[in-house]
Image (cartoon, rainbow, N blue to C red; front, side, top):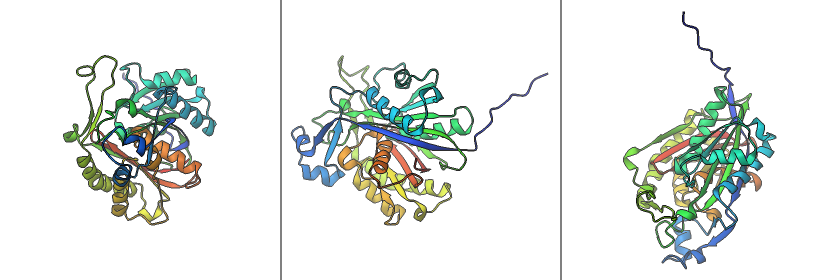
Length: 331
């Protein structure tokens, strides 16, 4: 006679308990950028909103930034490394196929036996990780999940490429997701357009890159811009709706820090009230892909522009072309 499979006790809700971040130490101004590419500081700022970006220096690596951001998040949550059930890392900047960067982070933090794995969804990666963590916590599989977005994209840039070199940057952001007595995360709206896999991509370094060099990042900027200002704007509205809210009930909007003009277009589409705080972290950070949302979130809270308990829409979008958005309660 067959027995009945036992399931874990589900937690009713999950929420983000804390956030931490680290940025590349090297500040690269538009003026310095224009010594590498044929452009002007004014053109870069007008097209993207970026005035400077942060790149790693010789003392930093994706691992060191991820560990620093994670330690801050754990301390702020009052969670010890021993209590971490799982580590989910979103990155395209870990150049060792296996083990995952998450495993290295677990070792550095002193987590004894967490589930540890990486996600590759580029600029949507943090959103994919956040949705995964919520499912783990609500399903009872994990109590506390560390979600990390980390990139060192300066290593992957053709610094003479006028279309990409000035956009991307380096940083890490981490959040702790844990159980909650009240709803802290709305349903995720996510997906991928597989017809556009070649719009943002890197070289296959196993086939084309000389030994010791990194794969270059390439992007069809115009196509990404059109996609983000139409389809992603619609998905942002959908994320608000499935959370049972209206735009005027938001306090904060933290889009992926891709381009200020994309953010402006999304604001017009969503018709957000003027009192909604909008992240513009890209201006002094650049586009740090999977790290951009948690890094921007931490900055808003640290600067007092947003506060714990605020209702925020977060949405990431990029290579794949992939996207993931949720309404959350800020930690």
